[in-house]
Length: 378
Image (cartoon, rainbow, N blue to C red):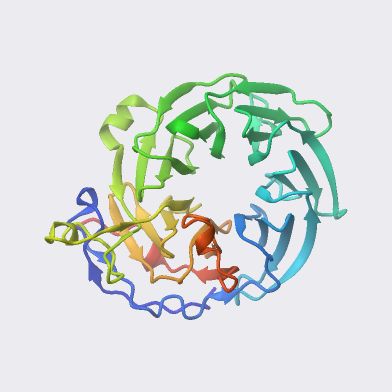
């Protein structure tokens, strides 16, 4: 895939925990060839997810719809393939492991299942409160695949798609704000900074309850592809790298600043923060996505930028220029050659910021190894 330009220079990373390593700065040309997704949503975009089996992109949005697009991996050209609707804003849409179905959760309190072959959607669950997040997960020693939904009524529910009632319900300490799963790890980020980690070998109970390592509200959690930990993003422009194993956490866990700017729009690097009388603007981290091959990851925020990082080297790999709108959702495709990002209003500035001309679109960026692959250590 080669529809993007790239140009790099050296820059120190944005946190003292990530300092003294050469990183790649934005020059303004990196996004020039990014491809627009045609016939996009009519309201703010809440979730992006690529199929694990083919180049199909599912998009959830506030316009009550889930759209599925087919993407050419060589050119980035795309077209609509399917669409289904809820009766309220859709907050989450995710693929089954075999890529044949999509589950979605919405403000209408419904969990739906869409079959790609038949183009039919059915309700598989109904709740007493809006559904904030859904995932397909594989439970127990038999790896039985079910849909799990996280709610604003402080519960987590598991659904066998053939049955009308949940097969299991877990009480959570607070409302669900975000959720992710990888391998046998399910992590739920709740209100009041609560984090619940669940071992899917024993999915009926919380394996570990803890408070977020970050001081303010959790916006997003994203599990590592290996299933041994997760990253957290918060409203104060920080990201935390967390591990399930205590010894590994003591050795490799850390947090860092990101998505912060000086008044002139420049990234607030560690050196810039020491300049006298510098006012730093802090933005929420809205999305974190892990590369499926390299295990590196992206962060994206309300400042309109996204960055690529290497958590193992504690290094920022690439900082991209602003897209002049909040980035609300991101996703890598199945082999990490395409990075999708959604530009739309995230309500971080209140109703005053919701201008009629605010961008509402999805772009496809062709990743290159010098942007996203781990650097060789000197």
